[in-house]
Image (cartoon, rainbow, N blue to C red):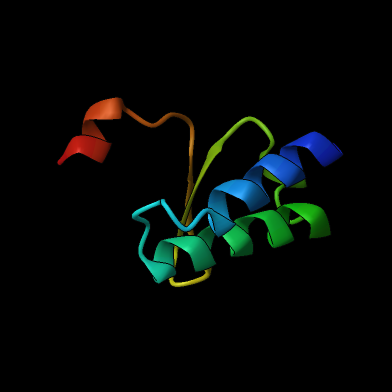
Length: 69
C-alpha cells in the first residue's frame, strides 16, 4: 500500500475530532492490516464488508442507498 494512503488512513483514525465509535476505528485498522497481509488479492474487483474485525462478505457492488438505511 502506498505510504500516502496509509498516512491518510492513520490520520483519519487518530483524529480526535472524528465522531467515529471505537468499533468503527478497529474495523478500519483491521481492514488495512488484512490488506497489507494480502487477504484481498483474490477479491481485488469487489467490495468488502467488515464488522467486528471480521470479513463478513465480498460483493460485486455496493449501492449508496444501502449505507443510508
